[in-house]
Amino acid sequence: MTQLRIGVLGASRIAEVAIVEPARILGHRLVACAARERARAETFAQKYGVERVLDSYQDVIDDPEIDVVYNPLANSLHAPWNLAAIGAGKPVLTEKPFARDAAEATTVADAASAAGITVMEGFHYLFHPVTKRLQQLVENGTLGELEYVEVVMRMPAPEAGDHRWSFDLAGGVMMDLGCYGLHAQRLFGQYAGGDPKVVSASAVERTAGVDESIDVHLEFPNGATGVSRNSMIDPDYLFSLKVVGSAGEALAHNFIKPNEDDRVSVTIGSETTVENLGKRTSYTYQLEAFAAHVLGGAALPLDARDAVTNMALIDDGYRAAGMSPR
Image 1: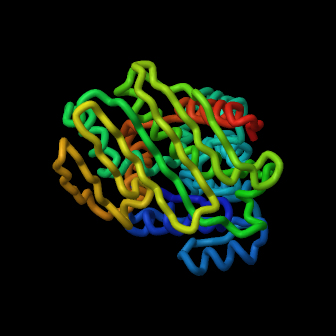
Image 2: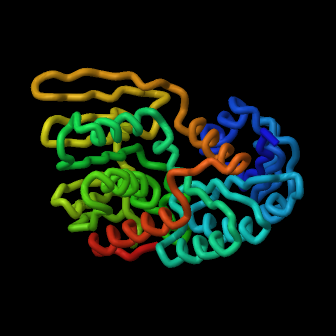
């Protein structure tokens, strides 16, 4: 088999870029979808070429013609429906964050391990040449010893009724954007002695318990530092990742959407060079890797245990800001 048969839970906005277009490009089938309201699923299916509409998420998961499940539901629904897919023996590509908190993430990871089922958190930026180039610049010594990592994630405010503003649906900017920032910090921890720990954090709450902005400061085992700056109330979008070493620094101008801006600026001394790493979407690279794993057993750069570690760091960030994990 060279083609994935994909079942989609919900009719979310992210699905178009995260699964619909990559599946079209790579030749995989969108077999079925379901939503809370069947009419929404029917509109989604007609617009994006999904082969059929089913009555419930469980029907999608249980469909014998579906090989893998894509879960882009509200944050609070990631873990429950990933557990349902594990129970049906279906691998899952799940949107981040993996769960509401580390305890819930552990439940999912334990179930996946016991069943031998892959549940991969969709940190698509990992798969793009932009991120790989930043890693290479650290690995090959171009930037010297890693000293500082800065991730900035800013976007305009979602509408007032958006699920990202709901505590019950596990919303908040740390969950929506900060999960990327902390994951990227951990990615570069391998060059700084291991995973970072949270040193301090400060947040502004939109409503009780729901953060609209949060900055998390971190320290790595070798003494390097990092910061994850996040805002869901900015006038513009900014998704940058900067790594600074003893010999220079490198900046990915938009590491989350390299299809819009694929630049990596490398500064050594007074000289800056700009590299363009390609505008194929990171989601396409991600689905390509996920399919290679499911269909042929190829290794993946992250697993459910990685997700547990990331959720634990998110929980630590909330506590450091004087807030509760979701």
